[in-house]
Length: 392
Image (cartoon, rainbow, N blue to C red; front, side):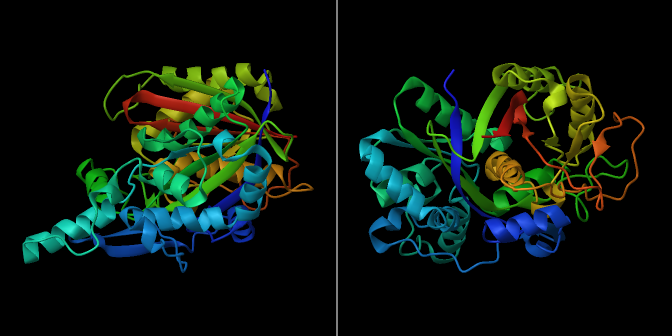
């Protein structure tokens, strides 16, 4: 099967607002961007991974798409503007597709509008329902960039943007597109925070993945977007494995069969052995069941020696943007010209004897030259995906 490549990357999250700052914070295990907020869940202060940047405005002609979510997307796109312009010039607007993942879209704007309506009996000027449509990011980008290929948004909870990359890859394999803009974006909003709080899944402090003291997630926001094409580039998307075990609407299958199937499918698709993988980015939400199930599924597929870590204490669980962001972390490792520090596991070090004894990366571990990296994303409803990336 024809290989596809991930070229330019635009990224921002709680670690930083560009590749350099994100790369630096990632390898240092920096948690400074995880800050307490008391304005999201009534009567409760929680850690969230917020973006602190002056975001670009949405042009007046695209007011129907004006949302913080699309501003985050625009900020990431600006980082790869030159590469996008070159691709459009080379292939033509009809041959460029867009596939993005999101979970929130402009829900925050909807929350603000309804609060205003309750107080004033009317929606505020400038509010447009389309701001919170799931399709908004891809529709906005299609209009703003003037591309005319297929454009859609994937929303499968925590696998959304990893699934978007898999869909983009299929557009290239099928010959429908010559290049695809793909990735994910999500923004903080009260709906998701309070929803997870209702499930008793929000951590009291900084999330603590794979610890016996883990007590839930932190939510984060941000964006990660790639230009993907069949032309050779710095990183190859070697393989993708997807599954849907449909065990429960929100709980993972306790046997982890779907997660295991996705990881094995990714390895088979890539044509590589589990022992070839130099680093695995774990889904690692720090919830009781997810970490338990993932640890044993990973041990069955990769063994217990592959270096791995959950990066969610650094940026929060970015929901619809989590998959693309953690794939971007792998991209950053694979584009290091020499051996580099792997993202350390930030936790209290209290191992849970019920979990498989994975080889969690530590601060101060010897640098490693990564040739192949993998990333897991698992979602509500048993929706699973594993992606494998390699140096070109």
